[in-house]
Length: 300
Image 1 (cartoon, rainbow, N blue to C red):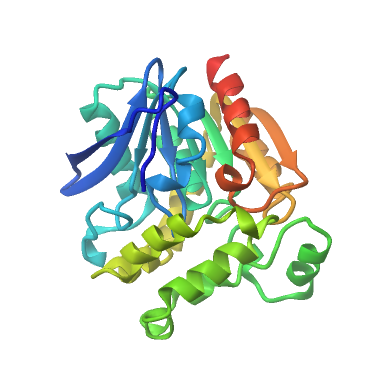
Image 2: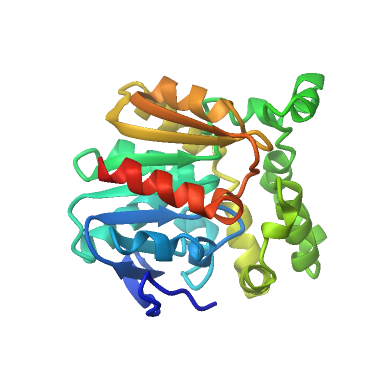
């Protein structure tokens, strides 16, 4: 998938040796560094619509998180927990020469962005946290099958996160999804969106190609099989709230107001955005608005 900067020049691809694996990434632009961390089941190309809007002001770095895209997919024993993945990201930015940087994450990538900011407080200058809750601090409760979670969807204040326990089960999701990767993940992503037509066919083809490749589905699911380790990390970090500026963005069609409420629990300087006409994929459904907010927030 071709991605260009604000001048129309292609982004630069690279592979970094970090934390015992090879991490694929793209970078482009000029100015302060801005790290973009994607969620599931996406890759660096999730940011294709906003990268050209950011590169005139920032040096953008967008990796494929371990287990996704063209990054390595180590065995489960090598770790898919948030501390392992944020070590990957910190070493990537070190290797590229970025001593300090802002970070924006969405979905599972927002959890990694929070942990990165919490673990490397001398490095991360600003955190943009989009469309996620944190393990150990409310995410599991949203996965319960109960009337409150089912009613929340109709009231546009969150949804039942049924997929978290399903993806956690060993082997069963692989058995049911293998051979149906494109159908399953297309349905799942569109169901989470306010505007389902904002999901590009080209991106779906790329993402599901990687998922259907050797180890792809297993690695994706392994990121959902560390909730207790991630929860322990998040609770420990929350004991010392972030003091850097934090921008929290929730979309009413998915996590909604819970995002801002959560960030006020774990950070002291929070700017909240709650978008009515948007679902779970901010950078696809509202790229112009997201880019404007990031430029304003990261430039202050």
